[in-house]
Every structure is written in C-alpha cells, then in structure tokens.
Amino acid sequence: MGPLQAAFQTGGGFATYPQLCAEGATSRSLRRLVCDGRILRLRRGVYALPGASGSGMVAVRLGARLAGVSAAESFGLWGGWDERLTVCAPKNSSTAGRPAPARGAVIGELGPRVHSTDDPRDSAWCWRVALDRCLLQTLRWSDEETAIAVVDTALTAKVIDRESSSPAPNICRERARSSVVRGQGQRPASSRSSASESNRRGCS
Image (tube, rainbow, N blue to C red):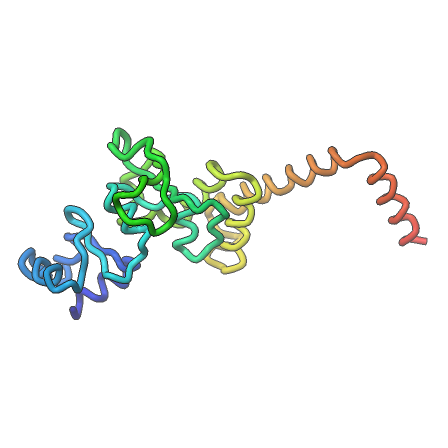
C-alpha cells in the first residue's frame, strides 16, 4: 500500500478518508483495497487494517470512540477488571444507552455503554479519545482503585510524567491521599494503638 501504510500506522491501524486521500488514495483505489481484503471499511469515511484493534472497530462501527478505561487499555495501560467496553459518542447519538459487550465483540452483540460526551476538538484519533482525555474520563467514571491504577501505569510507562501539563496525575494523587486519610480514619482503635506501640518499640 506504500504511503497509505504509513497513514494507517500513524493512526494506530485506522485512518480516515481525508487522511488517506492526503497520501494519494482515491475512492476507486480504496474500493479495490476493500474488495481485496487488504483494508476494512468500518463506516463512511473510516478504514482500518484487518489486524487493527477489535475494540476500536466496534466503537467506530457504532459511530463512537473508545473512551475511559477502554481507551486507556488501547494505549497499553491498565484497563481495569470490567470486560465491558466504554465508548463516547456525540450528543444525541443513536448508540446512547446500549449495554456493553466484551472487548473485541463483533457487531450484532450487545453494544457498548456509551457516554454522550465526545468532543469534536479531540480529533487526533478517529477510534479513541486522546490519552490525556481518557485519563480524565477514567478519573471521573471509574472507581477509585481503577482510576489510580490506570494513572499509575501511565506514569510508570512514562507516557505522561509528573511535570506534565496534564492535570490527571495531580488529580489522581489527591484522590490517593484522600483514600489514605479515610482509611486511617476508619481503622479500628486497637489497630491504631498496636501500630503506635510497634512504632515505639522500633524507636527504642
């Protein structure tokens, strides 16, 4: 596919019609590639390589994009224990309100849980939201343990850093500190006194 291959690689296995045309594709050449099975036409104006993310294909075919923990997993981060997809679609999308399938499920099964909060300004990926946005979504939509684990893996993998302009690490650290404080406040008195006694012995 030559230059078209580069467009798909840049897009994580997905590309839009304008992106492919910018690399020299035409409607006729794309139809030929689809007929040959070399690329897939997921919906009007969006194509993918056969080996692209199955979860991403589900989202695109529904007119949505991977979001929250599902987007985080597509970036190689912790994706939580919930096997259902999380996607976001434009407001008033017909996909809203559908229950969610397992990741990678084929179209025809129950559709994903949809958040009607997609932002057209977030246009870097046609099949998933941007990393910074997916982290913030995870902090809003997921339980505390999952949210902290996702952001922690992002920091460990250095896809974001502690000096990043992203607010996600700071928000997550505040949530983690709040969780620790609550946990200490709820610890039984006997446990606190035992810990205090242990500390005294360690200092003696």
